[in-house]
Image 1 (tube, rainbow, N blue to C red):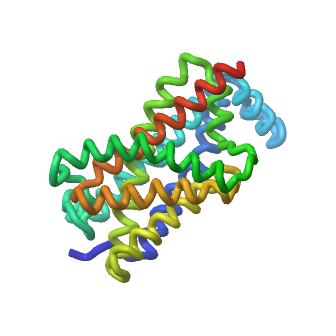
Image 2 (cartoon, rainbow, N blue to C red):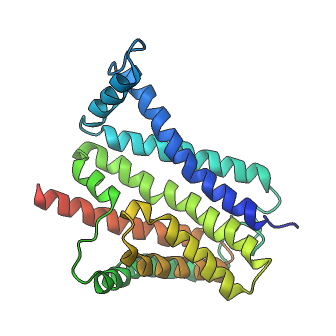
Amino acid sequence: MRAPSLWTALGLIALYFVLQAVGSTVIALILAVALGFVRLDQGVTQVDNSIHTMLEQPGMQAVLVMLTLGLAASSTLLLTRHRWPHLWSLAQPPGLGFARPSRPLYLALAIAVGVAAPLLGGQLTQWFAHGQTVSQDIQQLGADTPLAWRMPLVLVVVSLGPVVEELLFRGVLMSALMQRWQTGWAMAASSLVFALVHLPGLQWQWFALPDLLLLALLLAWLRLRSGSIWPGVLAHGINNLLAVAAWFVVAHLSG
């Protein structure tokens, strides 16, 4: 069965992030009109100011993030399922891994990876940062999100995000790379791409790269050893959960 080409895989990843960028703007405009912040007779500058005013309301940025991620992730999942239905449930590459793990042990290992990766990666980041403050866009989002909106935001970040990113990086991209290179190089290259595309959300702090690379390599190992995407999704979700929980705790203490 034919695997995704490298350019198709990279294009799908680019499409996912473009959908987030464009979708965020469109959804923000729709929300602003629906909630009465924007009138159709306003000029472009007034519309932009009105949208910013809306997003300053409690919880609105969290709502925008959830809707945008939901749109981008669901569109990407449906497109991939439609494009490669024959690869969807195949265990090993070029299959996309929507299958049961070969052994339940890998789910236990996924929990261990999800807990250990942010601890080890955090130490690496602090070592490379040399005392610089490590911040992320979502960290500020957590500080600005009211308590009532934090639970749905966390659920989206620890579930939908990991599913689509594991599909893109450990499913489509790694399958494409393994048609060209040996397994180790394919793991390394897909992990590097994963780390690089997350740098904008880390405000381009290069010293966060080792943390992201470590996590991506562990997730790639889980994917190949288990013959399933689900252990990686579980580990990725736990990693996100611990990170978000830490940001919310810090925000609560500082507030």
